[in-house]
Image 1 (cartoon, rainbow, N blue to C red):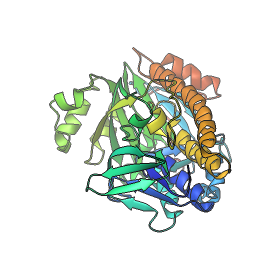
Image 2 (cartoon, one colour):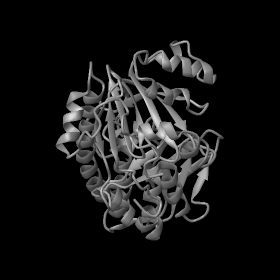
Image 3 (spheres, rainbow, N blue to C red):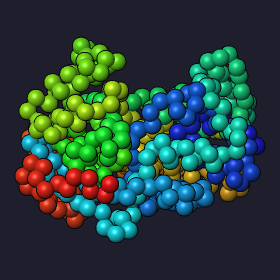
Length: 393
C-alpha cells in the first residue's frame, strides 16, 4: 500500500495536526470536511493543553511557540463551588503556570488550519460511505462525487462514517446532557459574572447538576444534569427561543444561589443542548488494511477529565510520525493503534471517574478531595465573599 495519497475525513484537531505533520514531510494529503467553513458552528470554550500529550504534538508540528502566544493568563486557575455559592476550592495559577496552558478551541483550530497549504482542506465535502477497492479506498460524498485514496484516516468525530469500517461499536448515552452557553465580552459586559467564575476552570456542583466551564474574556459554560436521553426533545423547551431556553434551564436549578443562576440569566441568546455520548472504555479492533481512526472517532468519551482534545492532538501526531517513519505502512498503523488503544482506555476510564465524582447526590465530596490532593486550597468559605471582582482582567 502506498502513502502517496492520504485522505483525512474531518477537520477537527486530530485530523488537522495529522495533515500538518504529513505535509511537512512531503506526503500528499487532503482533508475532507462536511462543514462549509471554519466558522460554520461554535468551537467550544477553553482547552488546557497537557505537557505529555497535546504539547508534544504541537512541538512536532512546529507550532508550539505560536500556540504559547495564544494562551490565556490566569487560565489554569480552578474554582469549585456548591449550589449555595460556598467556594470549596480556589486555586490560583502560580507564576509561569502549572504546565497546562489554556487556549480557546477556536484559536487552536484556526492555528492548525492556517498551518496547512492552501487548498488542503476541502470544505463542504460530506462523506456518506466509504468502501475498499483493491489497494485503495473509495469515498462517496453527499453531492454525488467520488474520491480515491491509498490511506484513509477517520478523524470525523463522535458519529464517524469511517468507524464502521473497523468496528461495529457505537456511542452510548452517558446519562448526562449539557446545554452550552456563552457570556461574550465578559470583562466589559458581565464583570459580576466574571467575578464569580474567575478566568480559569469553574465548577459549581450539587445534586447531580452542574454549571461550569471556563472564565475569561468570553465565559464558556455548560449546564449539565442527569436527564433522559430524549430530554432535549421532550422537555417542552424551544431551544431557538432565548426566553423559553432560559426559563427551561432555570427550572433545573430552583434552589441554587442567585449568583450562579444569574450566569444563565445574563448569557448570550444562543443555547446548544447536547446529550453526552461515549464509546465503550477500552475499545479496540483488529487491523483493517489501509484505514485507521484518530480522536473522538477512535475513543469518544465524556469531557469530564479534560482529555479529549489532548488525545486528539497526540493521536494525530503519533499517526503521522509512524506513517513518515518509512518501512511498511501496515506495521506503522499497527504500532500507532497499539499505543492509541492503551492511552485511550486510560483516559476514557478517567473521564468516567470524573463524571461519577461530579454528578452525585449532595456535595461532590470526592471531587473536592481530589483537587485538595492536587494541592488546591479553599480560600473562601462563605457564598461569594471576597472573590475579587475583575481579577486578572
